[in-house]
Amino acid sequence: MKNEADAQDVFQEAFIIVFQKMNQYRFEGSFEGWLKRIFINKLIETLNKRKRDFLFVDAVYEEGIADEEEASDSFSLPQEKLLECIQQLPDQYRLVFNLYFFEKMKHKEIASLLNISEGTSKSNLNRAKNNLQKKILEIRASKNV
Image (cartoon, rainbow, N blue to C red; front, top):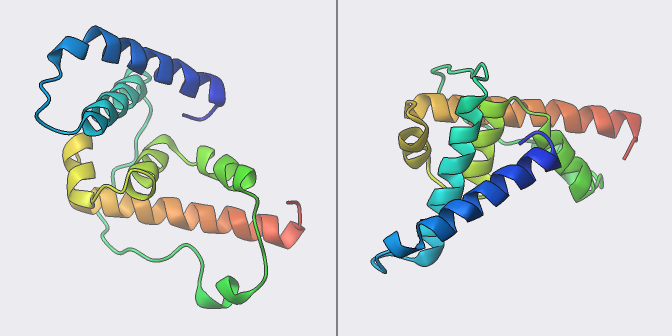
């Protein structure tokens, strides 16, 4: 979510769903996986309800966030600033980015979950990384850390 209050709302609503559906957990898979699926589905449902304009583009090339020259410099970005940059990403880019990097999901899983193609998932991740790279370079240039 773009702000902490919205994230807390989704988090709370997801926990309510967990408690309401606790009797539906069948002990067939990991509880963590079951819980994670509820939270992800609640987030997607919330974003869909807001009728955001999602960008679905079918490009498939992935690159890293920073090139080797930039990585070798001694520039450090505080975690809070990085999270702020991630929160500023367009919703669909941020969602794919978070699922890929923080939830460690593969593009095939993300595509299935969001009802998009794998190419779109890869494209959205690439665009998210490019947007983040630009933001980080702007911060670095201004030394406004």
